[in-house]
Image (cartoon, rainbow, N blue to C red; front, side, top):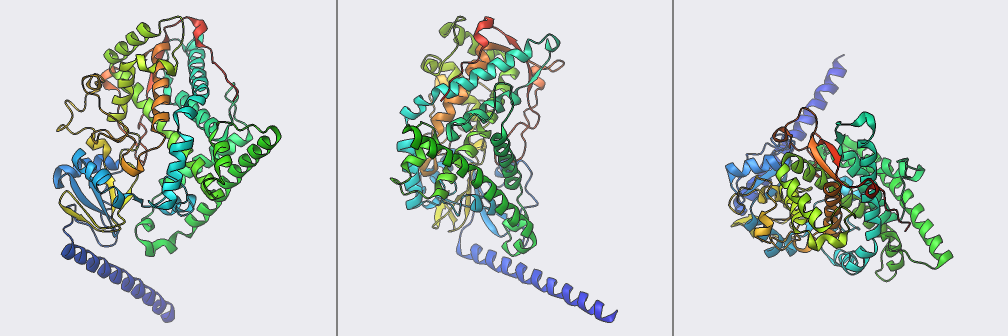
Length: 520
Protein backbone atom coordinates (compact mmCIF):
# COMPACT_ATOMS: atom_id res chain seq x y z
CA UNK A 1 0.00 0.00 0.00
CA UNK A 2 2.75 2.42 0.97
CA UNK A 3 4.70 1.59 -2.20
CA UNK A 4 1.63 2.27 -4.38
CA UNK A 5 1.02 5.64 -2.70
CA UNK A 6 4.67 6.49 -3.12
CA UNK A 7 4.50 5.80 -6.85
CA UNK A 8 1.33 7.90 -7.23
CA UNK A 9 2.93 10.76 -5.29
CA UNK A 10 6.03 10.55 -7.48
CA UNK A 11 3.91 10.72 -10.66
CA UNK A 12 1.94 13.70 -9.32
CA UNK A 13 5.19 15.47 -8.40
CA UNK A 14 6.63 14.75 -11.85
CA UNK A 15 3.53 16.08 -13.62
CA UNK A 16 3.50 19.13 -11.33
CA UNK A 17 7.17 19.75 -12.11
CA UNK A 18 6.48 19.49 -15.87
CA UNK A 19 3.50 21.85 -15.61
CA UNK A 20 5.45 24.41 -13.54
CA UNK A 21 8.41 24.17 -15.93
CA UNK A 22 6.22 24.71 -18.98
CA UNK A 23 4.47 27.61 -17.29
CA UNK A 24 7.81 29.23 -16.44
CA UNK A 25 9.06 28.72 -20.00
CA UNK A 26 5.86 30.29 -21.34
CA UNK A 27 6.15 33.28 -19.00
CA UNK A 28 9.84 33.81 -19.77
CA UNK A 29 9.14 33.51 -23.52
CA UNK A 30 6.26 35.97 -23.25
CA UNK A 31 8.34 38.41 -21.17
CA UNK A 32 11.13 38.19 -23.76
CA UNK A 33 8.65 39.06 -26.53
CA UNK A 34 7.22 41.92 -24.48
CA UNK A 35 10.65 43.44 -23.81
CA UNK A 36 12.06 42.94 -27.31
CA UNK A 37 8.99 43.64 -29.45
CA UNK A 38 6.15 46.13 -29.45
CA UNK A 39 3.35 43.60 -29.90
CA UNK A 40 -0.28 44.46 -30.74
CA UNK A 41 -2.59 44.59 -27.69
CA UNK A 42 -4.97 41.73 -27.01
CA UNK A 43 -6.74 39.63 -24.37
CA UNK A 44 -4.52 38.40 -21.53
CA UNK A 45 -3.37 34.82 -22.26
CA UNK A 46 -3.23 32.04 -19.69
CA UNK A 47 -0.06 29.96 -19.27
CA UNK A 48 0.15 26.96 -21.62
CA UNK A 49 -3.29 27.33 -23.25
CA UNK A 50 -3.04 31.03 -24.13
CA UNK A 51 -6.46 32.38 -25.22
CA UNK A 52 -7.81 29.08 -26.62
CA UNK A 53 -10.59 28.94 -24.04
CA UNK A 54 -11.60 32.57 -24.63
CA UNK A 55 -12.28 32.14 -28.35
CA UNK A 56 -15.92 31.66 -29.34
CA UNK A 57 -16.73 28.86 -31.85
CA UNK A 58 -17.47 31.29 -34.73
CA UNK A 59 -13.99 32.75 -34.68
CA UNK A 60 -14.33 35.55 -37.21
CA UNK A 61 -17.26 37.06 -35.29
CA UNK A 62 -15.37 36.66 -32.03
CA UNK A 63 -12.33 38.39 -33.52
CA UNK A 64 -14.51 41.19 -34.96
CA UNK A 65 -15.90 41.78 -31.46
CA UNK A 66 -12.41 41.78 -29.94
CA UNK A 67 -11.32 44.39 -32.49
CA UNK A 68 -13.87 46.76 -30.93
CA UNK A 69 -12.01 46.41 -27.62
CA UNK A 70 -8.37 46.07 -28.64
CA UNK A 71 -8.31 47.88 -31.98
CA UNK A 72 -8.08 46.85 -35.67
CA UNK A 73 -4.90 44.82 -35.04
CA UNK A 74 -4.54 42.62 -31.98
CA UNK A 75 -2.67 39.62 -30.58
CA UNK A 76 -4.23 36.32 -29.57
CA UNK A 77 -2.35 33.25 -28.33
CA UNK A 78 -3.22 29.73 -29.48
CA UNK A 79 -1.31 27.93 -26.74
CA UNK A 80 2.11 29.59 -26.78
CA UNK A 81 1.80 30.50 -30.48
CA UNK A 82 1.38 34.21 -31.19
CA UNK A 83 -1.37 35.01 -33.70
CA UNK A 84 -2.07 38.49 -35.04
CA UNK A 85 -5.48 39.42 -36.48
CA UNK A 86 -6.12 42.44 -38.71
CA UNK A 87 -9.62 43.73 -39.47
CA UNK A 88 -9.38 46.76 -41.79
CA UNK A 89 -8.65 47.23 -45.49
CA UNK A 90 -5.60 49.40 -44.76
CA UNK A 91 -4.02 46.74 -42.54
CA UNK A 92 -4.98 43.99 -44.99
CA UNK A 93 -3.02 45.90 -47.64
CA UNK A 94 0.01 46.04 -45.32
CA UNK A 95 -0.19 42.27 -44.83
CA UNK A 96 -1.00 41.19 -48.38
CA UNK A 97 0.91 43.76 -50.44
CA UNK A 98 3.50 45.80 -48.57
CA UNK A 99 4.82 42.88 -46.49
CA UNK A 100 3.57 40.15 -48.79
CA UNK A 101 6.88 38.36 -49.38
CA UNK A 102 7.70 38.04 -45.67
CA UNK A 103 4.15 36.94 -44.78
CA UNK A 104 3.55 34.44 -47.59
CA UNK A 105 4.48 31.23 -45.71
CA UNK A 106 1.83 28.91 -44.30
CA UNK A 107 1.15 27.67 -40.80
CA UNK A 108 0.33 23.97 -41.16
CA UNK A 109 -1.48 21.87 -38.60
CA UNK A 110 -0.54 18.17 -38.46
CA UNK A 111 -3.42 17.18 -40.79
CA UNK A 112 -2.41 19.86 -43.32
CA UNK A 113 1.25 18.91 -43.02
CA UNK A 114 0.54 15.22 -43.49
CA UNK A 115 -1.86 15.53 -46.43
CA UNK A 116 0.33 18.10 -48.23
CA UNK A 117 3.49 16.01 -47.65
CA UNK A 118 5.13 18.88 -45.72
CA UNK A 119 3.80 21.52 -48.08
CA UNK A 120 4.52 19.84 -51.42
CA UNK A 121 1.18 21.01 -52.88
CA UNK A 122 0.12 24.63 -53.56
CA UNK A 123 -2.29 25.64 -50.79
CA UNK A 124 -0.04 24.61 -47.88
CA UNK A 125 3.38 25.23 -49.48
CA UNK A 126 5.67 27.84 -47.96
CA UNK A 127 6.69 30.62 -50.30
CA UNK A 128 9.81 29.56 -52.18
CA UNK A 129 10.99 27.87 -55.41
CA UNK A 130 8.45 25.02 -55.15
CA UNK A 131 5.54 27.41 -54.60
CA UNK A 132 6.64 29.65 -57.48
CA UNK A 133 6.88 26.61 -59.78
CA UNK A 134 3.43 25.17 -59.02
CA UNK A 135 1.88 28.63 -59.01
CA UNK A 136 3.30 29.21 -62.50
CA UNK A 137 1.83 25.87 -63.58
CA UNK A 138 -1.60 26.91 -62.31
CA UNK A 139 -1.49 30.33 -63.98
CA UNK A 140 -0.03 29.26 -67.33
CA UNK A 141 -1.57 25.81 -67.77
CA UNK A 142 -4.51 24.92 -65.50
CA UNK A 143 -6.60 28.08 -65.05
CA UNK A 144 -6.10 29.77 -68.41
CA UNK A 145 -9.12 31.34 -70.16
CA UNK A 146 -8.72 28.73 -72.93
CA UNK A 147 -8.97 25.78 -70.52
CA UNK A 148 -11.83 27.35 -68.54
CA UNK A 149 -13.75 27.85 -71.79
CA UNK A 150 -13.01 24.26 -72.91
CA UNK A 151 -14.46 22.99 -69.61
CA UNK A 152 -17.55 25.24 -69.76
CA UNK A 153 -19.82 22.47 -71.17
CA UNK A 154 -19.21 20.41 -68.00
CA UNK A 155 -20.25 23.31 -65.77
CA UNK A 156 -23.38 24.00 -67.85
CA UNK A 157 -24.25 20.29 -67.90
CA UNK A 158 -24.17 20.10 -64.10
CA UNK A 159 -26.07 23.35 -63.57
CA UNK A 160 -28.85 22.29 -65.94
CA UNK A 161 -28.96 18.88 -64.21
CA UNK A 162 -29.61 20.78 -60.96
CA UNK A 163 -32.44 22.75 -62.59
CA UNK A 164 -33.99 19.52 -63.92
CA UNK A 165 -33.90 17.87 -60.49
CA UNK A 166 -35.46 20.88 -58.75
CA UNK A 167 -38.19 21.04 -61.43
CA UNK A 168 -38.98 17.32 -61.06
CA UNK A 169 -39.20 17.59 -57.28
CA UNK A 170 -41.21 20.79 -57.03
CA UNK A 171 -43.77 19.73 -59.68
CA UNK A 172 -44.64 16.42 -58.00
CA UNK A 173 -48.33 16.61 -57.00
CA UNK A 174 -47.62 15.92 -53.33
CA UNK A 175 -44.89 18.62 -53.22
CA UNK A 176 -47.06 21.57 -54.27
CA UNK A 177 -46.37 24.51 -51.97
CA UNK A 178 -43.68 22.63 -50.08
CA UNK A 179 -40.18 23.96 -49.52
CA UNK A 180 -36.99 22.26 -50.69
CA UNK A 181 -33.63 22.09 -48.95
CA UNK A 182 -31.55 24.07 -51.47
CA UNK A 183 -28.18 22.84 -50.18
CA UNK A 184 -28.82 19.29 -51.40
CA UNK A 185 -29.11 20.46 -55.02
CA UNK A 186 -26.16 22.84 -54.79
CA UNK A 187 -24.02 20.10 -53.25
CA UNK A 188 -24.68 17.78 -56.18
CA UNK A 189 -23.54 20.42 -58.67
CA UNK A 190 -20.36 21.11 -56.69
CA UNK A 191 -19.63 17.39 -56.24
CA UNK A 192 -20.16 16.40 -59.88
CA UNK A 193 -18.48 19.49 -61.30
CA UNK A 194 -15.30 19.20 -59.24
CA UNK A 195 -14.88 15.45 -59.80
CA UNK A 196 -15.32 15.90 -63.54
CA UNK A 197 -12.92 18.86 -63.71
CA UNK A 198 -10.21 17.19 -61.64
CA UNK A 199 -10.60 13.46 -62.33
CA UNK A 200 -12.60 13.47 -65.56
CA UNK A 201 -15.20 11.23 -63.89
CA UNK A 202 -18.88 11.65 -63.03
CA UNK A 203 -19.33 9.32 -60.08
CA UNK A 204 -23.09 9.99 -59.96
CA UNK A 205 -25.56 8.66 -62.56
CA UNK A 206 -28.73 10.40 -63.76
CA UNK A 207 -30.72 8.82 -60.93
CA UNK A 208 -28.41 10.30 -58.31
CA UNK A 209 -26.78 6.94 -57.53
CA UNK A 210 -23.05 7.07 -56.78
CA UNK A 211 -20.74 4.30 -58.02
CA UNK A 212 -18.13 2.46 -55.94
CA UNK A 213 -15.28 4.88 -56.66
CA UNK A 214 -17.61 7.77 -55.94
CA UNK A 215 -18.58 6.29 -52.57
CA UNK A 216 -14.91 5.95 -51.71
CA UNK A 217 -14.29 9.53 -52.82
CA UNK A 218 -17.16 10.83 -50.67
CA UNK A 219 -15.89 8.80 -47.72
CA UNK A 220 -12.42 10.31 -48.09
CA UNK A 221 -13.81 13.84 -48.30
CA UNK A 222 -16.07 13.29 -45.28
CA UNK A 223 -13.25 11.78 -43.22
CA UNK A 224 -10.92 14.62 -44.21
CA UNK A 225 -13.44 17.18 -42.96
CA UNK A 226 -13.69 15.33 -39.62
CA UNK A 227 -9.91 15.20 -39.23
CA UNK A 228 -9.45 18.83 -40.28
CA UNK A 229 -12.23 19.95 -37.95
CA UNK A 230 -10.47 18.53 -34.90
CA UNK A 231 -8.02 21.02 -33.43
CA UNK A 232 -6.80 19.44 -30.21
CA UNK A 233 -4.74 21.46 -27.78
CA UNK A 234 -1.66 19.52 -28.91
CA UNK A 235 -1.64 21.47 -32.20
CA UNK A 236 -0.56 24.51 -30.24
CA UNK A 237 1.11 22.90 -27.22
CA UNK A 238 3.64 20.54 -28.88
CA UNK A 239 4.71 18.77 -25.68
CA UNK A 240 1.16 17.36 -25.37
CA UNK A 241 1.34 15.54 -28.72
CA UNK A 242 2.34 12.23 -27.17
CA UNK A 243 -1.19 12.15 -25.67
CA UNK A 244 -2.68 12.06 -29.20
CA UNK A 245 -1.00 9.08 -30.87
CA UNK A 246 -4.38 7.89 -32.18
CA UNK A 247 -4.67 11.13 -34.17
CA UNK A 248 -1.40 10.34 -35.95
CA UNK A 249 -2.55 6.81 -36.85
CA UNK A 250 -5.83 8.18 -38.25
CA UNK A 251 -3.89 10.69 -40.36
CA UNK A 252 -1.63 8.01 -41.83
CA UNK A 253 -4.59 5.76 -42.70
CA UNK A 254 -6.55 8.64 -44.25
CA UNK A 255 -3.57 9.76 -46.32
CA UNK A 256 -2.95 6.22 -47.63
CA UNK A 257 -6.64 5.82 -48.52
CA UNK A 258 -6.70 9.14 -50.40
CA UNK A 259 -3.49 8.37 -52.30
CA UNK A 260 -4.68 4.86 -53.24
CA UNK A 261 -7.84 6.17 -54.93
CA UNK A 262 -6.01 9.03 -56.65
CA UNK A 263 -3.26 6.77 -58.04
CA UNK A 264 -5.90 4.37 -59.35
CA UNK A 265 -7.57 7.22 -61.27
CA UNK A 266 -4.19 8.53 -62.48
CA UNK A 267 -3.32 5.04 -63.80
CA UNK A 268 -6.67 4.84 -65.62
CA UNK A 269 -5.96 8.15 -67.38
CA UNK A 270 -2.40 7.15 -68.29
CA UNK A 271 -3.65 3.87 -69.79
CA UNK A 272 -6.43 5.63 -71.75
CA UNK A 273 -3.99 8.21 -73.09
CA UNK A 274 -1.60 5.47 -74.30
CA UNK A 275 -4.47 3.67 -76.03
CA UNK A 276 -5.99 6.68 -77.80
CA UNK A 277 -3.15 9.22 -77.84
CA UNK A 278 -5.79 11.77 -76.82
CA UNK A 279 -5.19 14.22 -73.94
CA UNK A 280 -8.30 15.54 -72.23
CA UNK A 281 -8.78 18.99 -70.71
CA UNK A 282 -9.36 17.60 -67.20
CA UNK A 283 -6.82 18.65 -64.58
CA UNK A 284 -5.55 15.09 -63.98
CA UNK A 285 -4.65 14.67 -67.66
CA UNK A 286 -3.09 18.12 -67.77
CA UNK A 287 -0.92 17.46 -64.71
CA UNK A 288 0.21 14.03 -65.90
CA UNK A 289 1.23 15.36 -69.33
CA UNK A 290 3.05 18.33 -67.73
CA UNK A 291 4.65 16.31 -64.93
CA UNK A 292 8.09 15.97 -66.54
CA UNK A 293 8.14 19.51 -67.95
CA UNK A 294 7.54 21.03 -64.52
CA UNK A 295 9.47 18.34 -62.60
CA UNK A 296 6.52 17.38 -60.41
CA UNK A 297 6.62 14.46 -58.00
CA UNK A 298 3.61 12.15 -57.71
CA UNK A 299 3.02 13.64 -54.25
CA UNK A 300 2.74 17.10 -55.80
CA UNK A 301 0.35 15.91 -58.53
CA UNK A 302 -1.86 14.23 -55.91
CA UNK A 303 -1.61 17.28 -53.65
CA UNK A 304 -2.62 19.68 -56.44
CA UNK A 305 -5.63 17.56 -57.41
CA UNK A 306 -6.88 17.51 -53.83
CA UNK A 307 -6.16 21.23 -53.44
CA UNK A 308 -8.64 21.83 -56.25
CA UNK A 309 -11.20 19.53 -54.67
CA UNK A 310 -10.80 21.10 -51.23
CA UNK A 311 -10.90 24.67 -52.54
CA UNK A 312 -13.68 24.16 -55.08
CA UNK A 313 -16.32 21.92 -53.54
CA UNK A 314 -17.58 23.37 -50.25
CA UNK A 315 -16.88 27.00 -51.17
CA UNK A 316 -19.18 26.95 -54.21
CA UNK A 317 -22.07 25.39 -52.27
CA UNK A 318 -21.56 27.84 -49.40
CA UNK A 319 -21.52 30.94 -51.60
CA UNK A 320 -24.63 30.05 -53.61
CA UNK A 321 -26.56 28.98 -50.50
CA UNK A 322 -25.85 32.29 -48.78
CA UNK A 323 -26.79 34.18 -51.95
CA UNK A 324 -30.11 32.30 -52.20
CA UNK A 325 -30.85 32.98 -48.53
CA UNK A 326 -30.33 36.69 -49.14
CA UNK A 327 -32.47 36.60 -52.31
CA UNK A 328 -35.35 34.91 -50.48
CA UNK A 329 -34.95 37.38 -47.63
CA UNK A 330 -34.82 40.32 -50.09
CA UNK A 331 -37.55 39.76 -52.74
CA UNK A 332 -36.85 43.22 -54.26
CA UNK A 333 -33.36 42.09 -55.28
CA UNK A 334 -34.66 38.75 -56.57
CA UNK A 335 -37.26 40.47 -58.75
CA UNK A 336 -34.75 42.96 -60.14
CA UNK A 337 -32.34 40.14 -61.11
CA UNK A 338 -35.19 38.24 -62.78
CA UNK A 339 -36.28 41.32 -64.72
CA UNK A 340 -32.73 41.61 -66.09
CA UNK A 341 -32.67 37.91 -67.02
CA UNK A 342 -36.05 38.17 -68.76
CA UNK A 343 -34.93 41.26 -70.68
CA UNK A 344 -31.61 39.76 -71.84
CA UNK A 345 -32.36 36.02 -72.11
CA UNK A 346 -36.13 36.05 -72.57
CA UNK A 347 -38.34 33.04 -71.93
CA UNK A 348 -37.58 30.95 -75.01
CA UNK A 349 -34.03 29.84 -74.17
CA UNK A 350 -31.80 29.22 -71.14
CA UNK A 351 -28.86 31.27 -69.92
CA UNK A 352 -25.25 30.48 -70.85
CA UNK A 353 -21.97 31.73 -69.41
CA UNK A 354 -21.52 33.68 -72.66
CA UNK A 355 -24.42 35.90 -71.49
CA UNK A 356 -22.63 37.11 -68.35
CA UNK A 357 -21.31 40.32 -69.93
CA UNK A 358 -24.91 41.40 -70.64
CA UNK A 359 -26.06 40.62 -67.07
CA UNK A 360 -24.29 43.19 -64.85
CA UNK A 361 -26.86 43.06 -62.05
CA UNK A 362 -26.60 39.27 -61.78
CA UNK A 363 -22.81 39.65 -61.46
CA UNK A 364 -23.38 42.24 -58.72
CA UNK A 365 -25.65 39.79 -56.85
CA UNK A 366 -22.84 37.20 -56.83
CA UNK A 367 -20.31 39.83 -55.73
CA UNK A 368 -22.56 41.12 -52.93
CA UNK A 369 -23.02 37.55 -51.63
CA UNK A 370 -19.24 37.09 -51.57
CA UNK A 371 -18.85 40.43 -49.75
CA UNK A 372 -21.31 39.67 -46.95
CA UNK A 373 -20.58 35.94 -46.73
CA UNK A 374 -17.00 35.09 -47.80
CA UNK A 375 -16.69 31.28 -47.66
CA UNK A 376 -13.30 31.47 -45.86
CA UNK A 377 -13.87 34.50 -43.59
CA UNK A 378 -10.38 34.43 -42.00
CA UNK A 379 -8.65 33.28 -45.20
CA UNK A 380 -5.99 30.63 -44.60
CA UNK A 381 -3.30 31.52 -42.05
CA UNK A 382 -0.13 33.30 -43.19
CA UNK A 383 3.13 32.78 -41.30
CA UNK A 384 5.89 35.36 -40.93
CA UNK A 385 9.19 34.14 -42.43
CA UNK A 386 10.88 37.31 -41.10
CA UNK A 387 10.02 39.95 -38.52
CA UNK A 388 7.94 42.81 -39.97
CA UNK A 389 5.91 45.82 -38.81
CA UNK A 390 2.15 46.04 -39.33
CA UNK A 391 0.13 49.04 -38.17
CA UNK A 392 3.14 50.30 -36.21
CA UNK A 393 3.46 47.03 -34.25
CA UNK A 394 6.14 44.34 -34.43
CA UNK A 395 5.19 40.98 -35.90
CA UNK A 396 8.02 38.59 -34.90
CA UNK A 397 9.26 35.88 -37.22
CA UNK A 398 7.14 32.73 -36.82
CA UNK A 399 3.94 34.61 -35.91
CA UNK A 400 0.69 33.54 -37.58
CA UNK A 401 -1.24 36.35 -39.28
CA UNK A 402 -4.97 36.26 -40.05
CA UNK A 403 -6.91 38.73 -42.20
CA UNK A 404 -10.54 38.89 -41.09
CA UNK A 405 -11.97 39.50 -44.57
CA UNK A 406 -15.50 39.09 -43.15
CA UNK A 407 -14.94 42.09 -40.85
CA UNK A 408 -13.16 44.10 -43.58
CA UNK A 409 -16.15 43.67 -45.92
CA UNK A 410 -18.55 44.91 -43.19
CA UNK A 411 -16.49 47.91 -42.08
CA UNK A 412 -18.77 50.99 -41.99
CA UNK A 413 -15.70 53.17 -42.54
CA UNK A 414 -15.39 51.92 -46.14
CA UNK A 415 -18.88 50.55 -46.94
CA UNK A 416 -22.18 52.44 -46.90
CA UNK A 417 -24.84 50.49 -44.96
CA UNK A 418 -22.50 47.47 -44.84
CA UNK A 419 -25.02 45.01 -43.37
CA UNK A 420 -27.58 45.61 -46.14
CA UNK A 421 -27.70 43.16 -49.06
CA UNK A 422 -27.64 45.74 -51.86
CA UNK A 423 -25.99 44.62 -55.13
CA UNK A 424 -26.50 48.12 -56.58
CA UNK A 425 -23.43 49.29 -54.64
CA UNK A 426 -21.28 47.58 -57.29
CA UNK A 427 -23.08 49.35 -60.14
CA UNK A 428 -22.31 52.65 -58.39
CA UNK A 429 -18.65 51.72 -57.87
CA UNK A 430 -16.83 48.89 -59.63
CA UNK A 431 -14.90 47.15 -56.83
CA UNK A 432 -12.44 44.43 -57.88
CA UNK A 433 -12.74 41.16 -55.91
CA UNK A 434 -9.71 39.27 -57.22
CA UNK A 435 -7.09 40.82 -54.94
CA UNK A 436 -6.63 44.39 -56.18
CA UNK A 437 -9.07 46.18 -53.84
CA UNK A 438 -8.42 45.39 -50.18
CA UNK A 439 -11.99 46.15 -49.13
CA UNK A 440 -13.20 42.97 -50.84
CA UNK A 441 -11.03 39.86 -50.52
CA UNK A 442 -13.06 36.64 -50.90
CA UNK A 443 -10.17 35.10 -52.87
CA UNK A 444 -7.29 36.69 -50.95
CA UNK A 445 -4.60 38.86 -52.51
CA UNK A 446 -0.90 39.02 -53.26
CA UNK A 447 1.28 35.96 -53.72
CA UNK A 448 -1.34 33.67 -52.14
CA UNK A 449 -4.38 34.88 -54.10
CA UNK A 450 -6.60 31.99 -55.26
CA UNK A 451 -5.57 30.99 -58.81
CA UNK A 452 -9.03 29.51 -59.47
CA UNK A 453 -10.97 32.69 -58.66
CA UNK A 454 -12.41 33.12 -62.15
CA UNK A 455 -13.53 29.49 -62.31
CA UNK A 456 -15.36 29.95 -58.98
CA UNK A 457 -16.97 33.23 -60.10
CA UNK A 458 -18.19 31.63 -63.34
CA UNK A 459 -19.77 28.65 -61.59
CA UNK A 460 -21.40 30.72 -58.82
CA UNK A 461 -22.82 33.23 -61.32
CA UNK A 462 -24.10 30.43 -63.56
CA UNK A 463 -25.82 28.63 -60.69
CA UNK A 464 -27.47 31.82 -59.45
CA UNK A 465 -28.54 32.86 -62.94
CA UNK A 466 -30.23 29.53 -63.66
CA UNK A 467 -31.90 29.34 -60.25
CA UNK A 468 -33.36 32.83 -60.70
CA UNK A 469 -34.26 32.52 -64.38
CA UNK A 470 -36.02 29.17 -63.99
CA UNK A 471 -37.74 29.71 -60.62
CA UNK A 472 -39.24 32.27 -58.28
CA UNK A 473 -38.19 31.55 -54.70
CA UNK A 474 -40.37 32.14 -51.62
CA UNK A 475 -39.73 31.40 -47.92
CA UNK A 476 -40.78 28.09 -46.40
CA UNK A 477 -44.44 27.95 -45.23
CA UNK A 478 -44.97 30.02 -42.09
CA UNK A 479 -41.65 31.89 -42.41
CA UNK A 480 -41.50 35.61 -43.12
CA UNK A 481 -38.60 36.81 -45.30
CA UNK A 482 -37.24 39.03 -42.52
CA UNK A 483 -37.16 36.05 -40.12
CA UNK A 484 -34.76 33.94 -42.21
CA UNK A 485 -31.85 32.94 -39.97
CA UNK A 486 -28.43 34.09 -41.22
CA UNK A 487 -26.37 32.58 -38.39
CA UNK A 488 -23.11 30.88 -39.35
CA UNK A 489 -21.66 27.49 -38.40
CA UNK A 490 -18.16 27.31 -36.89
CA UNK A 491 -15.31 26.17 -39.11
CA UNK A 492 -12.61 27.25 -41.54
CA UNK A 493 -15.33 27.47 -44.20
CA UNK A 494 -18.65 28.97 -43.17
CA UNK A 495 -21.88 27.17 -43.94
CA UNK A 496 -25.26 28.49 -42.79
CA UNK A 497 -26.04 27.08 -39.35
CA UNK A 498 -29.64 26.46 -40.41
CA UNK A 499 -29.75 25.59 -44.14
CA UNK A 500 -32.15 27.71 -46.17
CA UNK A 501 -35.41 26.06 -47.23
CA UNK A 502 -37.50 27.73 -49.92
CA UNK A 503 -40.43 27.12 -52.26
CA UNK A 504 -39.50 27.18 -55.98
CA UNK A 505 -42.15 28.10 -58.55
CA UNK A 506 -41.25 27.43 -62.22
CA UNK A 507 -41.42 30.56 -64.41
CA UNK A 508 -40.36 29.24 -67.87
CA UNK A 509 -41.92 26.81 -70.40
CA UNK A 510 -41.58 23.17 -69.28
CA UNK A 511 -39.31 22.15 -72.18
CA UNK A 512 -36.53 24.45 -70.85
CA UNK A 513 -36.05 22.42 -67.66
CA UNK A 514 -34.14 19.51 -69.16
CA UNK A 515 -30.49 18.73 -68.50
CA UNK A 516 -28.06 19.57 -71.31
CA UNK A 517 -25.72 16.56 -70.98
CA UNK A 518 -22.19 16.45 -72.35
CA UNK A 519 -19.77 13.53 -72.37
CA UNK A 520 -16.22 14.79 -71.88
